[in-house]
Length: 367
Image (cartoon, rainbow, N blue to C red):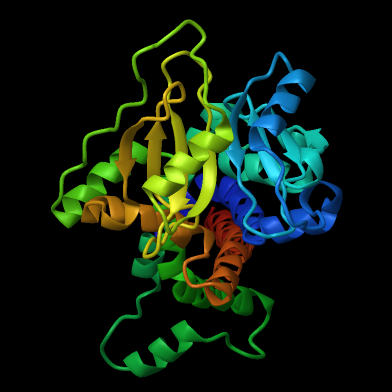
């Protein structure tokens, strides 16, 4: 009970913030498309514009901010989202049709869902906040586990009544008793999902540790990292163009849905295409084709659907955390899990404060 109380009071504020923001981010794309249709919606046309032409236009518009990634549209009326800088520092949006017109740009903190994401994942404090959010996620696992121990009804005479009381909220027993019962019952019903949210959330911060753990659980070894660089052919590394390089990757690994393009920003870096192949659970896929941008030669291929069991186990943690694994039902469950955190924090603080007041009064009376 002491451990549960101390952990709850220590991490409570951070968990309330991540719970509320996480619930909103479950429907991040829908919210963003509704609020910003001028950037995220276009009228489909018969032919697509040249992707390399769009990259060239962005380079002319933002010469000091190199494009590092392209998020591909997943809908016919979707737009290209180009990331400038590594963080990224800016998003630029382009029409995939109509000569690839640039629709506008924004920084991560200049729109609602971008700000919410940075608050959720980094607490608006960079890498330090990212680490704090990861530690809070691990504390959530400990809080949920210790709460189960505190919640567990004792056996013996009257055990059935104690179990019934532990699973329900008493009626007509007053505000204090109802608050205690609500905290106890909601904590129990949400405990498994809260522990899952804590584990999966921490895995998105402490990547390497959780990848090693996933391989250890699955009894597999992590595959060797594919080469990220190729020998420099000429100064400046003349490129074949993004459209040609993308076509090479799609021919090499057909049947997938292209999610991202990772652009080379220095001589010798590869052009990477990320896809979701049939059988993959990660919404963006974990399949990559690495292409030499100077020659179009395929340097390496990663098949996420045939990766070692440990890698496939780790790739499931992100869709579990965001609730997209089984569609709308699990997304709604993720929303409810996030909203349970502020409810548990408020009721838990109320119960703690009430008990502390009673102890103080009892101590004063004894004195």
